[in-house]
Image (cartoon, rainbow, N blue to C red; front, side, top):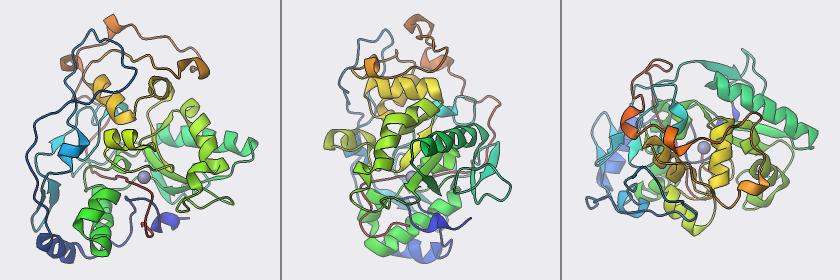
Length: 336
Ligand SMILES: [Zn+2]
């Protein structure tokens, strides 16, 4: 089933058409922003670090930046290519309105998966094998709990995101589009590890009640056990730190250990990954006691954490190819 792709979050794929009209439209409505110094973001529950990590630029400052549009590209002023994504450390790559993937990046090891989470050549969605295997296991376990999950969107190429963003701009204007859709290159869906999930029989993802539906609550409680984390949690404080509105359907695969640590830290993934990407120590948060660590999990020692400069930035494992996604607040109209 390669269709459900029509309606999802900000990052929906669809009509690859009108890029040119889109550019024209955007050019006419452009946004001017201020340059930004890197402000500080302090998350609650952060323990003292032995490695000094510079604070990530606040979303409030990034979102004031100008969108630069040419005949062939769309980008955010001052955007920077994120680290690690071409390596086997792709799980810690920060993607937000500032950090992006290369437009030519296409993840390696993509496999087909059906909307029901079954790995099959007939599947209409693509994910990196690790994420696909984990998702399949999660779908199976969810079913045991009477939760029927379905995939709404998975890997999205850079060009797909261009079309998605263009659609949002045409529909709601540039400024609104920024809130609900990732600029091409900035979407986690381009990593090949991120999915939008909904319910087969339950509340639709676009329904305002979805976040409190049995499906969403099951994911909130269990997704980390399969290696998935929710990138855009609800609540104004979290939204201010993730740079996009709440998305109860958007889940990124980072592996079981990292997912456990992220949920345990009670930090939004963007903040946690920034620290990890820059060699910060593990954060012991308030939620640890109630979580189940992965089998064989060993608490990482701060002294073993490699400084940022030691993190491989160009190693094998992943090879180049494409990029983008995003996500913002509850879908207003009907994202797609
Ligand atoms: Zn998404």
